[in-house]
Length: 427
Image (tube, rainbow, N blue to C red; front, side, top):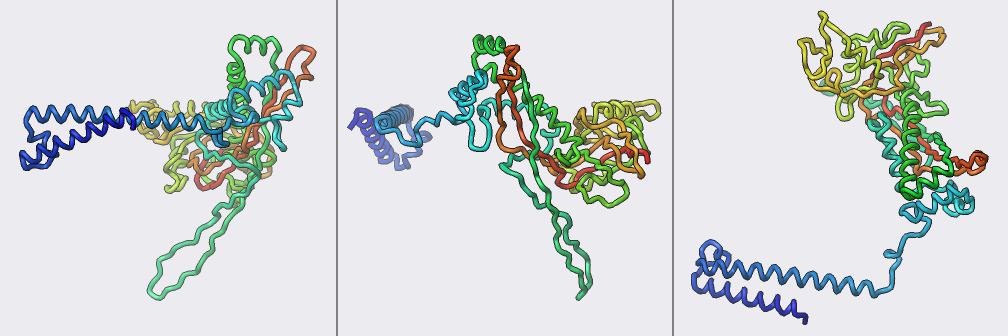
């Protein structure tokens, strides 16, 4: 037996003897020594407590060291083996991937590729790109974002059975649940960047591979975020993602079957954000059913619209006073960043004027101000960000072109959760 265990047993034995002696002398339980024992007894037991704790800790550490030493002598099991060289995480794969990118080594890229896709970007680089997507995309921060591994169909509630108050023995007509199908079809977005050989050499020389990976990830992430944000906002849903502001030339007054926003406030034909009134804003917010005015309930609009709302006046005094100043506060709760008590977010793709399109009817035109519960707007990213290198097209100037692409789709899951202020197009 080790010296540490012998010491622990000796201290424990002495400790128990002292407690038994105290109980025999006082007739009290050993636990009362701290409160009822003499000063000498309390000091003695305090010292033994400290010695016992120290001895226990030393014994535990010795046992742990012995166990680790035993494991090191055993053969390496599969669960403890290093990851395969083709794994996308770690510095080894990052160095291998970038070397293939720079040299244009197609055989190396094929070795890193899967059976169905090009070489995935290194895990750390993909993580940085995804972070940039969230930082640079307002809608991505608000919406429900999911990763999918293939095309998908979602089953969505269309109607619910209605309840009724009935008299004794009264009857009610049962109604079935009805459902809609929403097809998710990720669309491809690509970003490309040329890098000179001088830039590549200098970057590696001064900061290593990590620095150039960070540079590329930041630029590509912002580029992809800006491009996808446009379609998340005004995409038609036909050969492109469906945007929250999808207006799809649907008559304002007719029943909508295209799963687009069908409630809110209609301005007169071809008006701009300068024509929006405080009443329009209040009516639009209250057009969203109460059940949806919780959680991620927020406003999406343009900077021009925010500026126009900020200039609204009553009796020559501004209506919206961020911070709660002024006597007229019809559309503020006193906190910056809210309009009529609802958080707002500025998006550069929300239009500020009605689209001038010749039509034969007064149709919706442009959504200038959108409010709703963003849990019911979905973004669906196809798993993985892919990469490809072109060392030939710009070879005359000693440049290498790097491509990266992602696939994504977006859908309005429940149009009833949103309302908008629209500027209909002229008939």
